[in-house]
Length: 117
Image (cartoon, rainbow, N blue to C red):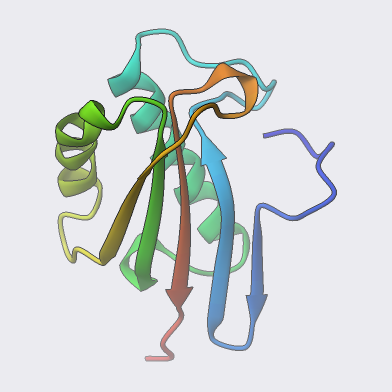
């Protein structure tokens, strides 16, 4: 996502990381073509990038909130979610939303805890 937003993609405070809502958009702010599955995969790729920007990874995620403009897409979200979090599946909430920025159909945010090894 572009840097036009007044908030960071991710914010780290000690071992806690909060990731702002990630949409299925490219770095230029364009929605990826291909419908829900493509947008969802891109949103999770953007979540990955935000986590990496503050020294975290998907294995550190403990909670995900997903917003869907069509709650019947929950099964499709589950398929992408299971593939993305193959190693561990954090807690997740799924919320129906009337609309999302850029006309997106899915947005994900996350909370992570970075554990020192």
